[in-house]
Amino acid sequence: MRKIVIGNPVLIEVTIEKFPPFGTLAVDDPEVSVKITITDSAGTVVVNSQSMQKNDVGQYYYIYQTTSSSVLGVYKCNIVGDGTTYDSVFITENLFELMVDND
Image: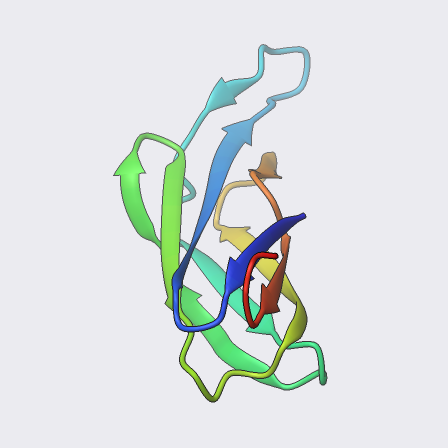
């Protein structure tokens, strides 16, 4: 799990792959969107179903900017690729810990 010092941005990356029946797994873009929801350690949703930015075919990212008033602890990312029947979402890391310093 990545440890992020409070006040710094967090880069969340995902790869969307399509695995058709009897086919080969391949990077793919969903027909509708890729959205992210981030929940802090208190269970509060801090990012609610926001669109992720496209980097390349099947590769998306979102930058979450923490502030000095962000809640410390472990945050969870829930990512949904919407609109393709056989999507698989591979998340680089879906948890990160927000801390005061990195010691």
